[in-house]
Length: 424
Ligand SMILES: C[C@H](NC(=O)[C@@H](N)CCCCN)C(=O)O
Image (tube, rainbow, N blue to C red; front, side, top):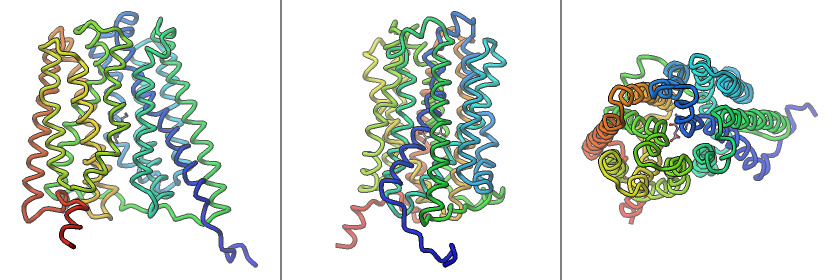
């Protein structure tokens, strides 16, 4: 019998979950490297005399290549496959982390962060494609939720490294070497994934990699108003979170007198709450619908938190818990909303475009806030900028709701409970 005629069995159940674990650990390393700068900010400014604008540059430059890269990253993944592309993008992350850890001048450290950024976002897209391939028609949303939880564990570990790796915080260099170690974990996992996926292709019957429409500029004009409100909310929301985290530890230390350990822990509260609550809020939204309303509530939480921290001596757990709620609620509802609003054939373009615009915001606001801190000699101006971003987020979520409850709505406000009601 020829090899083509042999009917291959489906992969065993456990194989799929091991693949998920392996690629999620690769993403753990990616998120660790991304968040390794913020707990170091005060050391960089003391030992290397970096300004806040320099620190903003180190974080913001990650996003610069992604303004172009995420769009072509999808095409590369389609062309060369998920195994090679995951390995290639992860290698870029590792090289970037190695360069950042090897130099002590701003230019070369920034080049390292740029190369890391070049690989990191496309690596996330490649891993998302892997999960889509292995879990489509199975427990896809749950698998994505677990993947994000393990990835955020990387952020959590990095932000709390001043506690569990306190001995290494005598110089900025050692924590960057730990981040390089996280990159080594990523490349090891990308290699194991390559081996497992090749083995599975020979032994088992697998779904083909789902093809997405290639990006065509004209498609942008086909997207609905609701899609654009989600994109605008995405860019304002994430610009109010990730660039805040860039300076958070230094801000807590200098303005609220916390230790570096405590500052790192407070910042990681966002990540911790998102690890636990994001899948739960996802379930809530699936059940009750009301997605734009939930995004309005999440945005409303954000507006006062920065001003509370800038002007009062409030217990920092309170604003950070409010921010943590927003950081759990909005992503849980926002990313899946795109799949409801946009036609499946354009989903790749829709997510690519959204991530591209998100990265424009992340780059700009890391630079702007760093500059604002240096210019004003404090953090109040930056906190007003963040609070305004919260206000615009609320406005876009409100406009989204208006559009969704009109006759042009896409069903964002409908949940499983409505379907049950209608059917009963
Ligand atoms: C799902 C979402 N991911 C992103 O926003 C990425 N484009 C950027 C991740 C930056 C590294 N922490 C998220 O993490 O909420």
